[in-house]
Image (tube, rainbow, N blue to C red; front, top):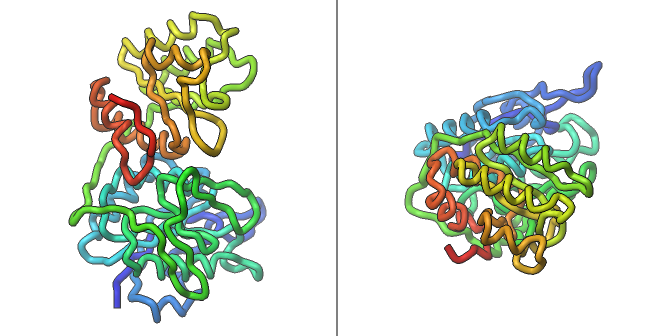
Length: 333
């Protein structure tokens, strides 16, 4: 029987109702008391790392999660992380960069309703996660509502319904139905994982809206080492900002800043080459383009890259190097 380590971090699944609403109260071992059938699937140990609403999750928490898995990696066949849904996709993406090429499954799950609720989705998600953690799948993934989604491709697309997560620009790895895991894609892995221990959290995200002020771009670039700009459609910057916005970005990049252009549109990705408002960015100042990556993956990848190097050429090569199938249309670099 396989050995699985459960890592508790809080979230809705572990919450109870108080005077101010739901807040995480239950630890990992208390969650498992609600699903005794798990013990017929595998041997389980528990560790409670945090007890927070996932709104409070930060890059420092991601590093502690990765360190916990690294410290226990040789002792277990897989890992199940119970996590709040709101930032679960960010955590899954970040762990995909901090723990690369893992031959063992690292599963994140949670719930839209607390485990003590009558109509909770937490029990089925937990049982499914342990089945997945005992499977032949590898790497970081989210298991939720019968879907197995690659960590770099997950996004929360529903705030209330049980079908909370979708796989963006990439098929699901597997489904779990009638207690059976039906696998479609087996992510590549190495014999041993590679663990990383640094992230640079000085990364900002700007969502463009009609009328965005150029000064906001300047402000975010001044305070951060990397800036991700979520533009419209296939990508570009509005012409009303004038050529000075290009000069702002170019000056920042010459000063060692990293700028990534992506799109607000959930599906199909960016292509800066199509319109004049985007094509100039490809050559001057030469920003990075996210293509079909999720914003969550771009955030995690850029924080990871900037935690390893500040060399512009190496940053570019690392960004366009696919990791855990995070990008399917890399530029020629």
